[in-house]
Image (cartoon, rainbow, N blue to C red):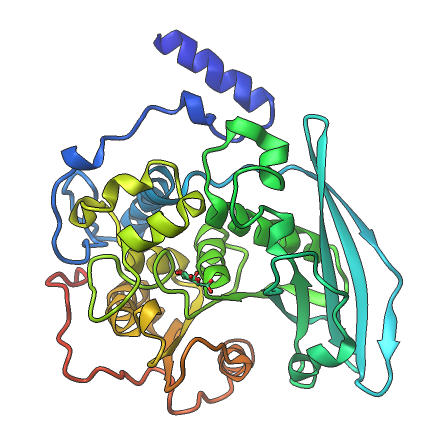
Length: 393
Ligand code: GTR
């Protein structure tokens, strides 16, 4: 049996799959056999109870957490396929001072191919490569060709944008097409991890795009795409700044801390089962047995920069809970000496994103500009810290 498994691992490695395939991985312990943890789980304790004391320990704990998120919540990040990028000629809108080009990113595996279409826009007057914001268009169908004008908000502040449709990487509501067409049943990821993979493939293509500085890549998205952006940032250390906007359940909001009519684990796995690992639904009535919670996903981004934009009237996305996950993730940033790389921004709004907040924070991260005062201000002043642990001294 062991031998067969080892052979299978070798077989899938030879196929170019970095790790074992779905049917081949040992099943993790079921939810009912996991210990109950009522508060936000402690980032500084390994699953076997050993404490994290040093930065080297954190690197190991980080690897452990990545595996826990993959095996229980999201499924595994699919491998990197063969990619061929075709670049259209540059067009320039002289009035908007925006230059653009379209990329077609062809991804292939085992005789199957899919294409992600990306529009890259940058300030015509830029003197060299500029930081780039990777942003999915919020559309469920084929993306329309975006106009130069729609990028002016970014380009006039010195940023490039790479806009694409995550539904090229995986459809919103089923496990077929996109990455599933490439790897079929050899992958166990849900849509959110498939979308994170999509962000990574766009970043691969941007690394070969001279007008942008791919070392200053920002990933962002709103709501469901915010969840995907957070996962993308957590699982790819090339990403310099992660901005999951109003990402809610499955994003930055805690499953364990519910304050009002917030989306709960049972709601999201009921409404969007395909977004997650097929077995994640076992936690619907066992939230406290989940070995992770979402502050730990945020902590995986550390020490790279992370901004949490939230709306205080956007109750479904649990902004009050995010104040807690932010505080909890912050302990890891501070432990790593990067306490100035994480922030939160509460606006008195409902379910709407803010480009200004993203660019203000990017200016701070990339250009050392002062941050407006509202950044880092807590909104729920009476709420006590919802966890008893702290970082090792
Ligand atoms: C809602 C869902 C949220 C969020 C949102 C969106 O229906 O409950 O988790 O994903 O959709 O993406 O707009």
